[in-house]
Length: 204
Image (cartoon, rainbow, N blue to C red; front, side):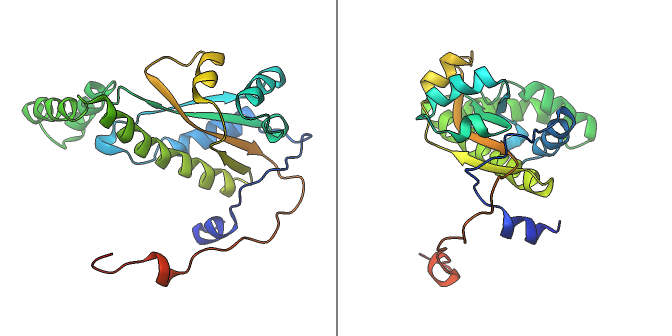
């Protein structure tokens, strides 16, 4: 499917065909694409918990305002952001050196810089949310291209979800994404604000 068509036809689906399941191979292919999402300094702060076991989906449903499509979806993804975004900085910048982006001295300067940026906890939360949401959108676009329907969900309890699924204290659940195959056609797309209203040239 062409990129424009993927974007135009992607919808948030609430009704899933419980008889059709996403395979391990599809998940592997999907997340091989998702990992290519951009992030600040390429720190890749995202973590994903894939929930497919029926009993675990029931547990997740209780954390998500009892929304029934949590259980009906083939897979639920708990999209998380690492609150220690520099956790893999050394490994990532070592690769930059190997690839010729910069030398060892520049690497040390870069490490000092990024670690300084994230000294404030409130900034780490904003930064990791920004980058992780980029990966979530790419997940939904890539899934649509593979014929898999999705639905992003903000209606859930992050603290209860973290406790229920063993998510560490320094990893923050940001959203849920339901994935599977839609069981009935979507309703017509609802109103979208026009170009003239959302785009501001040179100043707001």
